[in-house]
Length: 373
Image 1 (cartoon, rainbow, N blue to C red):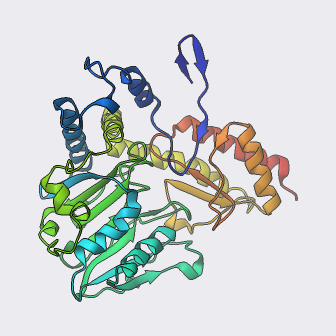
Image 2 (cartoon, helix red, strand yellow):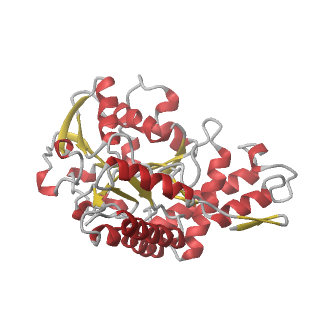
């Protein structure tokens, strides 16, 4: 709940998969500054992206991200547009030249889409491993991956929102040429950044509102962007040279990213966030595991995501009843993706413990009222 004038406003239990919950304090700060940012007499949305005021916001966001994720100096941090979906195109466009091969691990819909874009461009690709035949219920074991010295890179999706699976360890690749779509779990736990050539993530899960995409790319990769046939705005080096200000950036989204990063720092950093996320997820997984099959998780236990808890009830009718009654009780965004069905609770960083505890209690109550012996 929060106070709006003299009115107390109740916040929904927001379990949306994205755009997702934002920290309440961040929203309040943005509200307070909306009409007059730091005595400029303007909203952040009205500031010139070339102004000193916005430059401070922009550079501070980069510094905070570098600090929180321990990003080494040999990496560039870019703020781009187009979401992770545009990165599906930019990655092969920039890094696959000649006979080089892009190697993809298929763990869900988004990794399939990344591979599809590389093929549309006519680039050479291969599949290192896939769990599609198992309805993407698990992450492949590292021993299952088929990699080659000929691979220009190995691409993974670190967390699969639709299926509720998450990589627990990351592959070792030649020259550390691992590229990851981390849209669903970036900033949710500490990361071994040096094991990645590039990480990209849409902001609308853990970083802020939709509109900005964070790219963390090793500087030596930028030297490989040599083809003159790549349009200027689709070249990573264009944005690196211009500090992500080649064209007008999504200024308000970067401002909100800045606020969220301050919030994470004030909470104690990513390690504290990771501990909180483990506790939140355990509330729901414990209910599933102790339900004697009333709740059935989609993901295998060793591949379970801390960000997205996916589950089904014994029948489609009970799925529908659960979702309807949950909505009446104030729980938003629990519908599973149409390709999997059932239910999904997205537990991103800004989803509070209290919301997860309330959902846990609701799940227990619903089971008691609807199970048949």
